[in-house]
Length: 179
Image 1 (cartoon, rainbow, N blue to C red):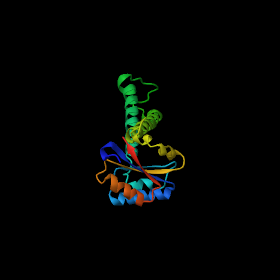
Image 2 (spheres, one colour):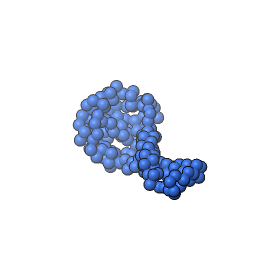
Image 3 (tube, helix red, strand yellow):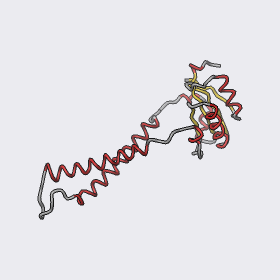
Image 4 (tube, rainbow, N blue to C red):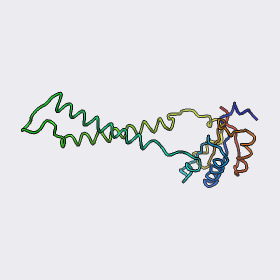
């Protein structure tokens, strides 16, 4: 057994998504907050069982869309009215209907860029290395196994009690994850 300071956490292995969801719910109810689940496919209501808050990504997308639209409209206004005013056929310099297509396109572009870069920033990607890669069984997380990792930085974490708790949650195996 290694000490908690040398560990990233404890990794519990399951063979069914329902067992993983039940273990995550029990761990959250038991007071664990620094935990993550890994599965080969999305498991319904697993994020809720882990206690994850709602994503901030929709707000970032909205901000990106608004900034894109405002900057597109402002760019067109500046070019048509301030920088290079040109009266064509007696139309007003600020002819907003002609600004709509470019404004719409820049709204979509701003929203898309904020979504992509916000998703990368919020999820911590790119992450070429993770401590879980040190556990050989974790390779099966992308094929047919389900894992719940309780991190050692969790206030409730005690290596012996947490390992016993994960075994009570019907884990097939409990692995120590070195840093």
